[in-house]
Length: 185
Image (cartoon, rainbow, N blue to C red; front, top):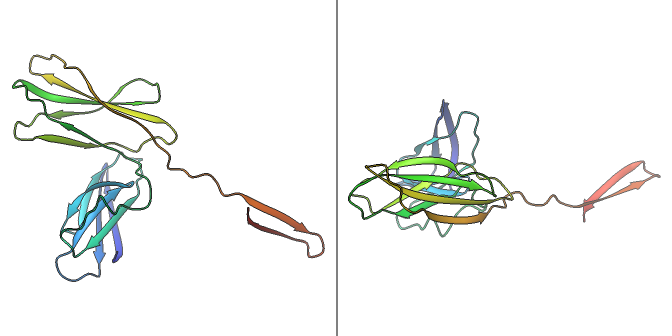
């Protein structure tokens, strides 16, 4: 990776990130938000929608290789977000898709209503930041023009673990030197 600097501008819920690479030629930028792949650009700038108080970790991999497999070489951190994927309904009267999320045994919460596109074969929705140490499940329901609801398709549950255990330390007191020393256990 050859990113030499990053510039971030935030206006309300829109965060725009510009990076500078020392690579020369056509550079392909692969963007990861909290470890989840969100796409490729040849421009060094990308905008993200984040809630006003929300923070996220952004990773950018720059390469000269147009065939770079961004999913085979993700950043080291486990994704803090999830990409919900579903295939479109073949029904002719589909209006939109309702995407809901459940954390643990909690209530289903609406994430988005995605309008149906008759030219699209499948859909992707990047979730917000996920809760550590909890099962998260998603369901997608098709709504038709008359307001009828289809049976829901479900994804998950996925158990999220991003926060590692704290390191264990051994502390010793030396009365002669009046010092405490510590080392990893």
